[in-house]
Length: 294
Image (cartoon, rainbow, N blue to C red):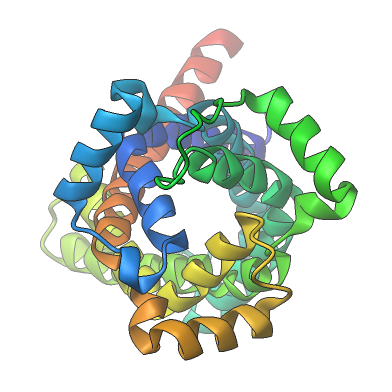
């Protein structure tokens, strides 16, 4: 089996494990991003409010679409990333330069965004559907297929590509993440080689994943807010520029950073778990295939 396919499967598996472990934080950060500045609450207040209104299951609204989304996103990303990376790593070259990391990330990111955007529109719609606190009528939670039908009936096929503009701009997020990751990994691996300490461990990948995601999310967070609000389907925002202008007018610059604390916690933890498990699943799969071939 081609290494790119194994990386893709390992990325999908690692992503599902990471998303399952951190989903309540994903849910909270999604809601925080689509709330206006006046509605923002602390993470603790948000958890208490959701538990009172929706129960424990409320923290897992949209989990099924998120698991599908992360499996597709990571599978596609790792496949294109490793295929593109292989073009540069010829003649025994061990690591990517900064520019090669950026080009590789752009190719993988654009392919992933176009393919996975419909799934994330469904997840965002599910996560924010029951958040209207002013309604006396209990809003029914929709499953994945019901949400698909709801979006199709309301907006047609174009509804599944809401927020695609900011999402494509956000390709820079994984570009930054994987570029930082690759360069830190190269530095650490070279240092350990000089000290004769052996290969990097799963814990190294855990912390490198966390650091690289912290940098990427901190830089791109305003666009994460724009994407979330557009994908939520509010008629208040007609386009990316319209959403940006409306948020700045109504909420000021602070509106572009709503829910940043919960998003940083969620994305950093998810990335750390993903990088560690992706590597472990990849190595285990390679070993299993080698044994099966004997």
